[in-house]
Length: 550
Image (tube, rainbow, N blue to C red; front, side, top):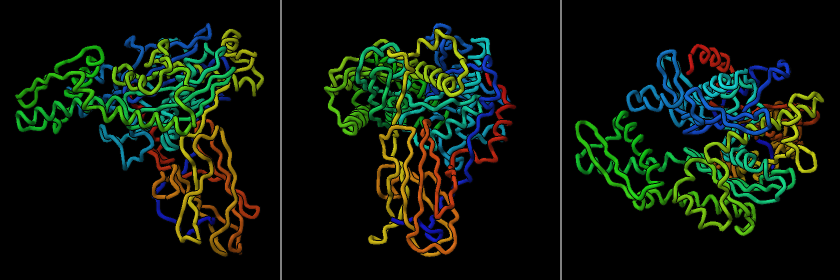
């Protein structure tokens, strides 16, 4: 097992690392100025919640008096409209619309960007506009400044996606207390009043663009994640697309023309498909009428036909559920309750799937659209309580503190686990090939620290190149590269000289690495190639500040 040399380094095109910093440092805020919220930053809808004066989580309605806000952005010069108005204008002005941006989080600008009025926006910046809308509306409703936030992400988000979410929160003007997994947040929303009952909960979270399944154990005042798996490119949009494609095929059959080649036609059809999907959850059939280029088609769609065309999506969900059970080494009879989260869990076919998998009762007293945001607001208070413990200064009302005490008077404790294995690429001299050595394995409780010592690949190496990857395979090409740590070594080291790596994985599942070689120790940040380079963050803040968000 040897660390790679500079000569063997493979180009990765990564950018220089940046240290994420909140725009408003915590210690610069007086305690009576701080107000924390929880935010569900969703693919199709987003929501914000806070803890009220009685210690209860409450959804904060937006300026349109809606409890959830469509994650749709409309650019109109220096004005940016987020929410229902933007969604309603998608058909009329599709070229000004951005939606489903959550699926692009963590991607560099070369892979994803949108341009409006001569300015290029990354996924972080676009998500920041959604967050800014939520912040402004919440401040208006609560009549006080909001400085802190806990933002949720799919449990299966990787390092780059989590880092991008933190950046988006900071660009929106939040001090990001923590990033929390969506199923964990949902379990918090459910479990806050269930601390007297030990139970194992299967969280099935199917939203507009992502799917997560997580097994949680509620025991005493502890909520522990046991296992998690998911697909962050599987969600309601894929069911919508099955209807879109069905109608487009019929239109092409009747008129010899594909209506999806026109952006406005696609937006109109997608809107009608979404409406049809919702109707088919409560009705046995519906009709979709679509007009394009002076021609039209009317298609009757039954629930049976819809379920047949989307069966492959249900099978994907089933496979992921079975995978998480295998990883947890549990059987379905050990599940006490099923918690359904996300608007897609209202579909009869999804409920039927859950019924096939387990006989455990389904929890019906949690709103699937609101549970994640409410759980995030609970985590925000837990984070502030931890600050109280460390500083000794009380910042919360007594009734709020009492609400969050466990059965023995202690605070609620939440333990998450890693959703991906974190490894390092090494050289195998015997096999003459590279392989991945796991440093922190999937399902390890976090925060986590791992140390291992490896030998240099050759004598007199001037630099050690640590290639960090994420994934379950031992083959580097099958893992996701997180970046490269290029570390200077002391002179005249013999072959096999020890190089010690330390991986530190924090509560946000963001990784930091330190390297020690012959007394030389360096804290090395990972070079992440997300949407914004270090020098672009300040400019992004200025650009977003010049936009009027409503």
